Length: 329
Image (cartoon, rainbow, N blue to C red; front, side, top):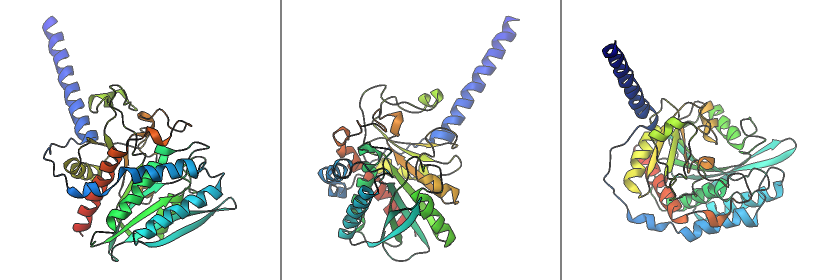
């Protein structure tokens, strides 16, 4: 009897072990590339410039909620002016929500091509918060990405978009700026090679236990210290794994990915969601938001809490991968 019990226990243990390994392979898609090929142009991004952008959005133009369209218009103008200095082909998508007009700002680089590559970030905030990490950090990254693209000879069309109305009460509705934009692409039969959403990319911590997760099981696969950048993707896609491999080899901070269904809280918590709904490949690059940053959606989400040196690496990692996608055209 004891022998049978031990055999049964052993079988259960083996099955659990196999399940844990399979989930690790499905969700985390581990990468075993360790060789770094850091490139000199990472120094072209100035952390002080990133901070200037974040301070401007989070302090000078605050609050940036839908209730303050005058400030959102100022932010839109600031973003447009920065894109202009990079020589982008500039346009805007004007749309109306409940009698008020809002704007997506669009910057295009490179020649016309069969498919486009999109990088986007939202510039509005939830309520009266300064929103330094959420999402002035993503916008700052978008603006500096434009400056990098200005000096690169491109083979395809790269489109940078600053979205508005990502935050509540419009989140998960067709009133989101990215919902309008993604639908306009679908309506015009535009092909998208990949959409990358920059959603909170500035908060990092070296404290053990600073990183939380939506499910306890994920602690088996990911670090307890919030000093990494994450790439979030749909369950059956390979896009996150590809960008993770590229970023891992081109920047020094750790990069992790997760492929998961959208019912896991946070997986679809940004503008990439609207591209998924239109059938486009899309991923989110993030510091994991409220799973790490306890100032999320509070007045404590200020510019001085961010790590601009690590933001430089994140932006360069994205630029390097966008360049790789462009060369594959």
